[in-house]
Structure formats: C-alpha cells, structure tokens
Image (cartoon, rainbow, N blue to C red; front, side, top):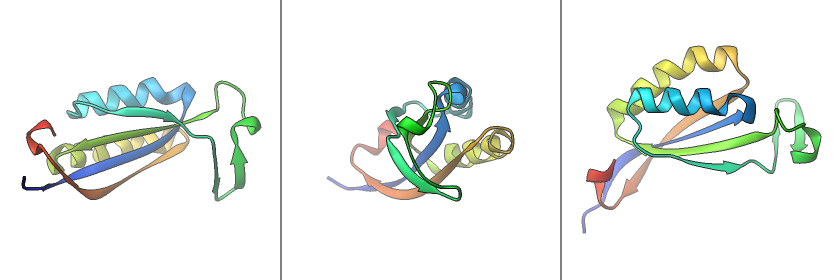
Length: 102
C-alpha cells in the first residue's frame, strides 16, 4: 500500500485551555485528534513534572494528523491563541497509510 505525506500537529497546552484549543482545531477542519497527559518535561523555565502544577495548569498533549491546507489554517488560528494562552504547537511531515482518512 502506498504511503502518503500528511501533517502531524502536536500541541502542548494547559488543561484549563484545552477545550478552547480543541474547538480551534475543529473549526479549522481537523477531523480527529488524541489528547494525552503531559507527565514531565523541560522548557525555557527549566524542568517540570505533573506534581509542580495544580489541576487547572497541568499540561496536555494534543496530536492530530491532517492535510497541508488544514494544517495551515490551524497555524493561522493558533498564532493568536498561543499569544494569549501558554503552550506551543508544532508540525512535521509524516507518512500515513489510508491517506483518505486525513
């Protein structure tokens, strides 16, 4: 089966702003995503883990795979979102099977 290239988007966001981000993705045309707990990491402000945060500021990772046009709409909408709320979003090319699903 042939593999096609799509865009994988990964966002890290505080749980308090998660629903806003999921709505942004949906409005931009993303048809599916997966949300997982962010357990620990390191950033500009140093190392962190879940114990460092209260329930509202714990972090979630959102994974989505989509086509290039939808990814571009997400990035355009995400710029003002992440100017206002803490977190990041990034993307990369990935190979997928069953590209019609994305």
